[in-house]
Length: 131
Image (cartoon, rainbow, N blue to C red; front, top):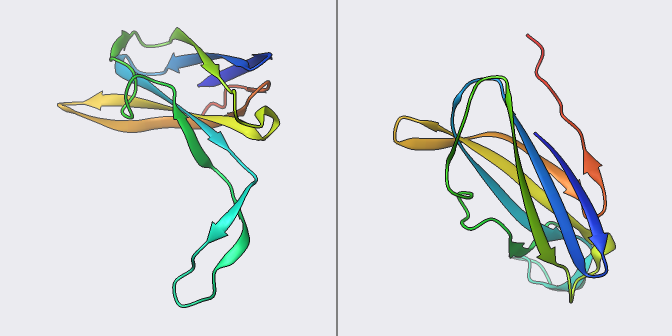
């Protein structure tokens, strides 16, 4: 998979590309995350840390479901593209990124086939497994 994000004010635009090496039914999931949030953290058997830095904090589920958007059939060696628009209002866009993941159907279940992070206003290219 690859993903590109642009920022227009407080609206993040995200384009996800899924290249299917094998044909099948796939779902795409997207979550908006934010890094660098400083809040109190209670740590078991230790004193609380009032200045704990929280990273990878889930801010928003972008896809329609945690298990991804509705399944789509993708033929082998074909590209599927999905776009999203997300408000980043109330968040520090420069500290935000998307977690993008692809699930592939196996019988009646789905498993995570691939995943990546892409910064808001950034891109992450394809990485292919070499055989």
